[in-house]
Length: 257
Ligand code: SF4
Ligand code: SF4
Image (tube, rainbow, N blue to C red):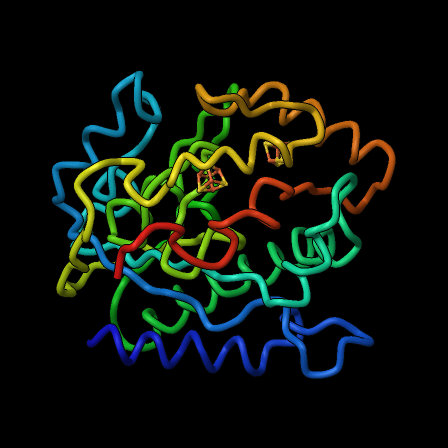
């Protein structure tokens, strides 16, 4: 199987799945077509994620999820311009962003399931850890970090705001599927973990609860703020001010390819 065939399956799903559309938005989708990247299951970086300074010892390798794992397909779903633009104003997240955050994640889960079912129908085995009953998040540490997987799969690097900056920017959502067949790994066109971040500091000024400093992001402050937003706007919630109205919103802010 080739990555371009998988890309076609994913693009078709974005076109036809109703979760990628919002009533009243016409043909404007939640997500534009995604970026896909591949990592080999035996990539040494997976074991490094178990270090305390990375994700932690609870993080599982591809083979711990799927014993005959050979590859990991990671994707970045960029939010459409309508969602990004609406959230550029300061303050509380826009309705469009909150819809993208909630319904968009429902779509993301549907895409994870679609890929697992597609590979099963073609005679392979696949699992998406985020959809697996063994998946855990304890003290904000997960057993499968989509951001770190995307980094290993060549999709982009981390940033001051702890998002992942891809060549389509940072405003979007990530997902992944582990498969038991080999695919050519995607080149990592970077050597530093934060290579795509310009350190411009724009996200520091955008953050309503001041969770970001020159040293990085305080996850506890960010999470407490998101909890307050949820308490006020339930079931909608979200923020994303550090991913919109900033130079890394929809591109790499530096002179990379
Ligand atoms: S706004 Fe600037 S400093 Fe913040 S993550 Fe984006 S590029 Fe990095
Ligand atoms: S999501 Fe919002 S609260 Fe959290 S770091 Fe980004 S701007 Fe700050």
